[in-house]
Amino acid sequence: MTIRKALIPAAGLGTRLFPASKSVKKEMFPIIGQDGIARPLIHYNVLEALSIGCEEIGIVIQPRDESIFRSFFDELPEDLHERYAKDERNASIETELTALSRKIVYIHQPEQQGFGHAVYCARDWIGDGSFLLMLGDHLFKSANSKTCARQLAEVFQKFQGSVSGVQQTPVHMLKYFGTLTGEPIDVTKHIYKVTHICEKPSAEYARAHLNVPGLPADQYLCFFGMHIFTSKIFDMLEYQISRKMRERGEYQLTSAQERLRSLDGQYYAVEIQGERFDIGIPSEFKRTIARFGEPI
Figure 1 (cartoon, rainbow, N blue to C red):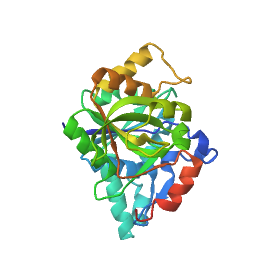
Figure 2: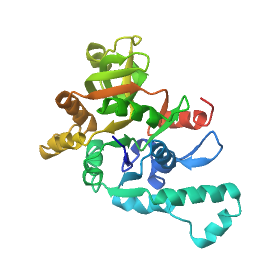
Figure 3: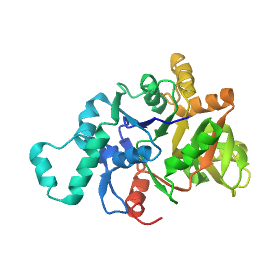
Figure 4: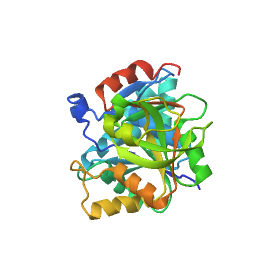
């Protein structure tokens, strides 16, 4: 089953990064990579999607922000193009960005109604196929020659069911992440069949319901920030939205994932060999600046 499309929600307000996010979308914050090039976060995520052969990338945005993203990916005005073209490296990057712009589709989320709603806005564009979903404020760094998305895609291809990337996370960080538990089905490759999913659980709930065989005490499997879903996820989201099943005032993706798991029975997780950086958290953004450009 080919994964032709990737979805990157980028319609959030970035309230935890205010006031910087007042003038610069957090997905446009610059991060210096191992090659010394300063790219905005969204550029890295588009490249991650291309690493598994995605042909189209949908970016979910607020309508008023479309010009911000277009101005980055679209071709430079002639006067600026001539100036950047004088530097071979900059000219090469500009050529790359122009090529990427042809693969990008902008999907509007008119109202802020939660992450689940942002994903649901792409239902018509995705259609019946499977797709890669990446959090727009996360950055991914592989620990080996396979990108994080490639590691996820290989599990999807093997089991042909929805799969979430996960990472072992200490109990004090659970308040930031969706968390799951499951039965190990390939210990050497750290693959699990998921048996329960919960959004940002308390330490008490996690200790009672989310322990995973083989993990150290107070370590849990939290979402890595990327998933591959079959189109069935949209039926789960429609179920919530049509019944106005909001949580904390929003439509949550995690609840749809738990419903998908319980009804479909084919939901998997794999520990990604790499590192996620959640720049939506100020302390994590600081860590990203310090560590992302270093050899892993």
